[in-house]
Length: 300
Image 1: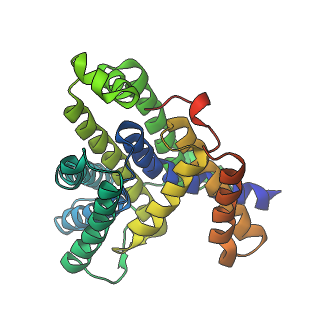
Image 2: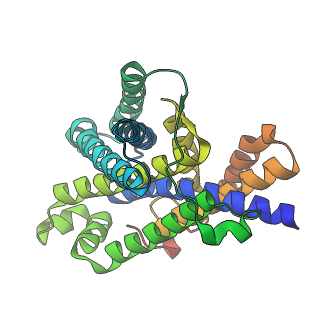
Image 3: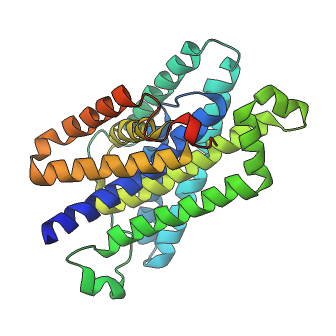
């Protein structure tokens, strides 16, 4: 039973990280029906930014929670700027083009950002310091869930609640929903659609940066390619849950995380990706719109 619980917690942690990235995919798709393949690279840039900031602060003598807070803030701001810039350069000029054009632009931007970081940093793996503190109240439960896992799950839960409040009860959230339902009608009633789309990219990129810092602290190393793998998994989770749906992105991420965790624990880590994508294929065969289809969920 302990082994089952350990795998369950591992899957919950993994799914929480996927959820932070998948939200960016599903928000952008919900607003402009674009699959932003460069989103995984924003996650990677967030992790690299936190590593640089933490290294500089450690060399200047700082330590503890102040390093964590500053690394998080700079990573979120820098990633948000990248998300905003990517939207303006790669997607906005193609808004009236066929759907294939922005898709190719997204793939090109993804490759560009990978090579940009590889040339600016290194192609090798770099060690990442564990910025997350040890929580004393978690010591009795350390055999089930460590402090790092608890912080990841708790952070994801808080982010989900804040994002839900933002979308359901704030003016920006209502404008997002209006833009997602009918962009032209939203413009007619005074919604600044360009600003809403930019805000969507900024919020999604900020969430990806949070995920990048958390998972890099958890795993302990990063390289320029981590965004591609995590991005593909998060995109899979978004499709699994029903892309365009925020609850679906969260549910799909958790299902994917648990699938990988239990497949690794009870079968073999060699088949981790096989089980994950086989599950995706099965669900899409029987429910093409994902676990939470469009007719039963609310878009962004």
